[in-house]
Length: 389
Image 1 (cartoon, one colour):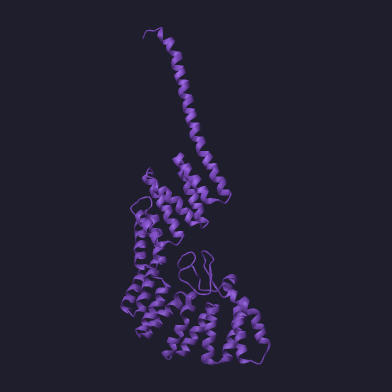
Image 2 (tube, rainbow, N blue to C red):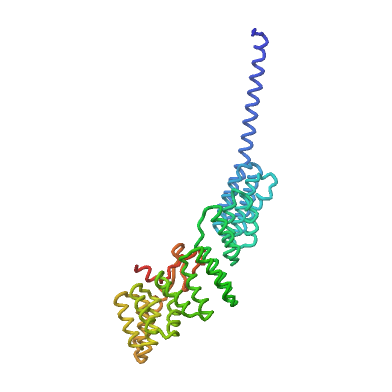
């Protein structure tokens, strides 16, 4: 290739064009980067000044100028949701969904966030609608199924909850056998309430198929058998609970004692009661033992049982029971009511159940924690016993 003299004259022109293009690109970049920070910093300033609604407007302006800041909106919406400001979180995610230029993947993400807003705010119908739309999105299907499972539990739509749990087991490889057993137990209780005992038994068989060691299913099977006037069968179910899941004995002991008494097996009932109390002592079981021993053997025997148990396992609640028994037998003693009153308030604080997952406390025993929605998270023992053990 031969050298042409005009090449030398073209070099300054090419250099000038390159310099101009480089300067123009830098000015455009600076303009783009300068506009967004002004809105961004303004939004942060308003947020720190506790003006969240005006801050949202500023952050929306940021997205208009720079679509890459969409992650900022997800973070901000999540922050509002955690703080319980559901309306503001919904506003942010609705804005994202209203954008015609939003990519399909980001639209699904925004819909998922909106569904979580509705779920946190208790707007279950809207949450169900949002997550139902996400079932066709591969990246969000399992998340949507888990959210719908919670929605159906809250709404007590147990049949649909069973469908969701089974889909999660089949598709995501998750284990929901405990929850499935409880869902069937809930349906069994509904059937029992309307005297549809055949359907109740069907649901209990499904519960035991899902979770063969389900204590609740065994207890309910005894209840259904008793409703059908099959008392020996009911006794068998409840005795199995006492032997195989002794921690749950207080939940069935009262009905078991009454059933055995109705069968003329009071001596066997008392022997079982004392044996259970000796092997797996609990405050609730002691309370029941005191009641039946007093009714069947007299106040002296009940007081002796309480004293013996308190020597083996001292407890504030047990001592209160002893004072109550003595107070009923010695109404003229002015010190007993005073002493019982002093410990009653503290004893009531300890007479609660506590969820192992979230720590929620309740006077009643729950199969499903009202706070964290976990199943079987309540040990059937009072707080005082848990803290001692």
